[in-house]
Length: 196
Image 1 (spheres, rainbow, N blue to C red):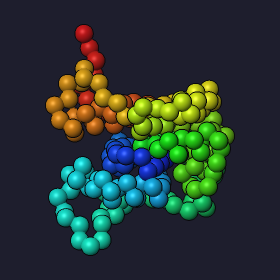
Image 2 (cartoon, rainbow, N blue to C red):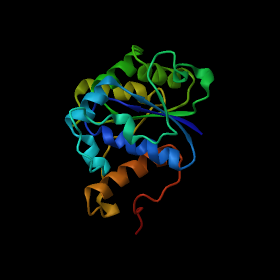
Image 3 (cartoon, rainbow, N blue to C red):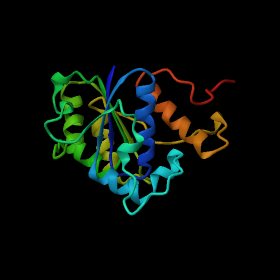
């Protein structure tokens, strides 16, 4: 399967990096689109610390690309393959998704490649999963999610469940990533599944 992972500027950009790497490791082709906001958040949150990297950055911050597997196709300009339905991408997840990106997807604004790729998923009626990272949701965000849900978009906010018995932040994040992979129909054993 060919999958696009859009990483917007919401908090927890490292989750987008982790899910992209897991999708690739499961044997799928991955295109990553990293917004300018994601780069800012990556630096401000020192996201490399959540990715298990012990390197201390010098005067230049570590780059987000350094944490994506080298086999992942990183696209950024509007002429990238993800901007066209003929490129054959079958699904897209925006993780995390900022409220700004959510609003623009709902309004059909396509002023960067991430938004254009989302618009392509909608027009081609392909799977689009959005992981809004906001709490609480504003009434406008809820309205946008409702409208997009009516168009077939799936919403999967990064929420944990204690039935998976997380004992660490990594366990809690594995639950979130595992659920996102489930949404993409990618088998995984990242978390303990519910059973009575």
